[in-house]
Image (cartoon, rainbow, N blue to C red; front, side, top):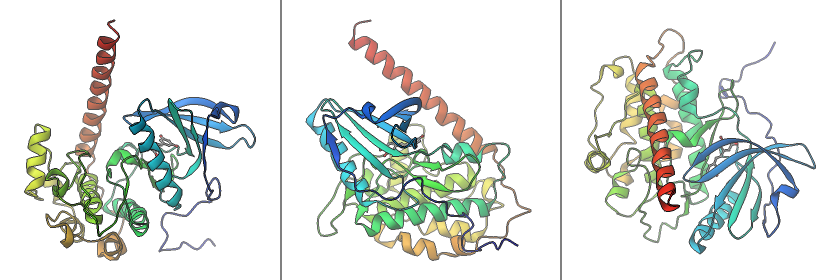
Length: 333
Ligand code: PIT
């Protein structure tokens, strides 16, 4: 008989490669060592392709970033330095790195399951509060490890949570492009992030800290359980205004079937005062993650979450067209 480990509903899988010491190689063409395959993702961060290491046949992902300015280059170098430290099963792993002056390439672990939110809205996925807790636990485990290394992710949002495979329940946190080393003695302020998910201290350009990521984790949990975005306004300015006053509630009928433990979990993260928020370690001890309500009967309605995901897809497509138009204008086409 196969014994199911109650403490491990996820099932740890062998990593596709052991942890490695990566050194960024200068003026070496990555195509000497890897065969590029299809594009798997594109965003502000650059373009990600599936690729295969020639020597081993190992499937990997290659992220290319254009680095025309010194500053772009320094940003990617910082990302590489941070990723070297972040060796953990809940975090995307770095395999290799190349610097060709005008472009840089990070060779990363291959993740084939797609974005978490795309996965859970699929008709054959049964979304329950327990399933949400299983995902939130893994997110918090990843963030706990990042924070233990004195690093802040600073871009925690649903797009950056991928499913490792199409069918399993294991997730990985990606995109350390905005991550920073954090010295609690020094004042760190940032001017970026996604309004929907950033903490009040980011909007106010105040000192940030570990709690800054935990706020975003609270927003992710709110959206996953209800399909509603707690601070979303008609415009980014309106959203940021809602964030600064930490103005949200559980009044929508979507929360009728949500347990008080789940709401308490969110309430302990969406606190205006960052020092009063649960830490990642504390969140793992919260009842919602330790003893989620029994699975079975209660299936959450995915109607609102589907609408949310579809809206995001549209926004992404519109942004892409606007970017292309600007490029065309620049080239005088
Ligand atoms: C995929 C599949 C995969 C890796 C990625 C996306 C990686 C994305 C990524 C990673 C980063 C980053 C930005 C994007 O800064 O195997 O669909 O470190």
